[in-house]
Length: 78
Image 1: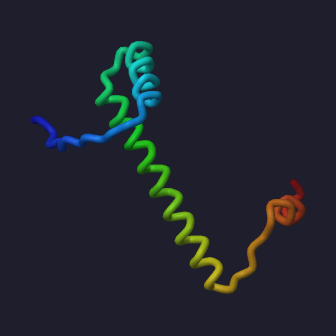
Image 2: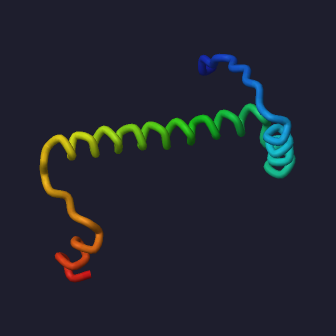
Image 3: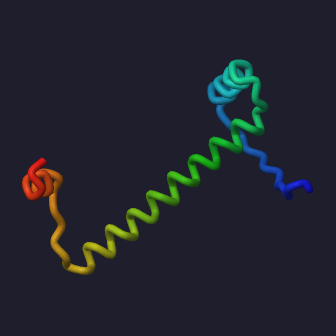
């Protein structure tokens, strides 16, 4: 069974295209594969960052005290 896919076209700087071409030669992977993997990784990182920002903003609104790394080390004897 084939997965449904969508086509995406993007203009990239020549220097980035040259890096992409070099990596395709080193890894024997297609440009499409490398771009897809790069987008997947970027989206995972961006989603994690967005979740962290929301959590941090909720923490600030809650009025609860936060602790620095040094305070936690001292508290737990690390």
